[in-house]
Image (tube, rainbow, N blue to C red; front, side, top):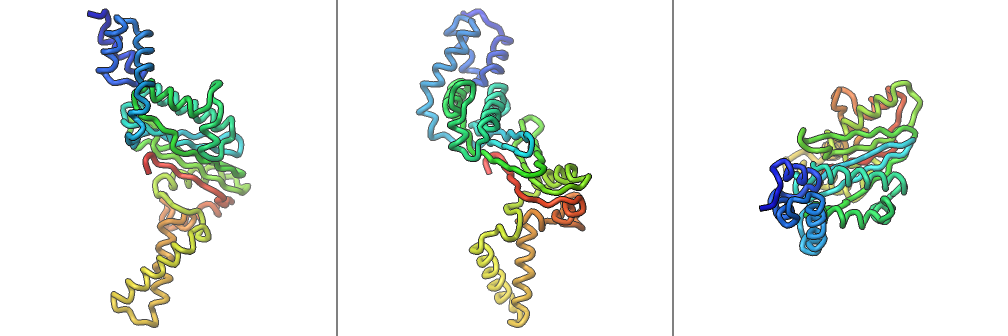
Length: 278
């Protein structure tokens, strides 16, 4: 029987993110040599890349950083939450974020081609999947630039790294602008707006909302003369649901997000919000 202990198993699991059975098999094959066992896990993982291609990657983490007036945010996915919170996967996320910032990546193609310690990020993805024995994915990247850029990362579970992330850019010169931007970034994480301004909502979406509102009003037997007002009222409610600056501010529902920013001397210019798997 190979010479290793429960502590050796635990240490190798933490180092590789591999499952208990895989770790024990590797230690058996390596006669208790942890370094050799880690190499066995990596090699076997590379052989299984093709088998993992069709697997679902619903778990993962969000990583983000602001440098100067530019923020980058990346979503990375794994198959299980065990891997998502493992040291190797968190380290993988940090390396990918470093590459995104260094390359100033604006889209996923640029990020996957970016350099990470002498190799493209796409190769790092393959190697990490091999090490962890799961399919891992760099799903998307966002780049937000502005006079002031706030970043907020939120943990949906205390046992996991951040699974919701927000970058918010604002312009302005108010003394409280950074605090206001942070507060609105937190709001954005919680309230999940789809658009920054009403003008950003596609015309097709607006027309569909009007049509539904009108049909609903007619089905409710509302008089024809008040239907246009009803449609406008319901359209205003739709905007309050999906447009960031129109939403009621989470910390003070008597104000809109736009009002809160205006009072701080700020104007929102761009935002990005990621939630793992959404």
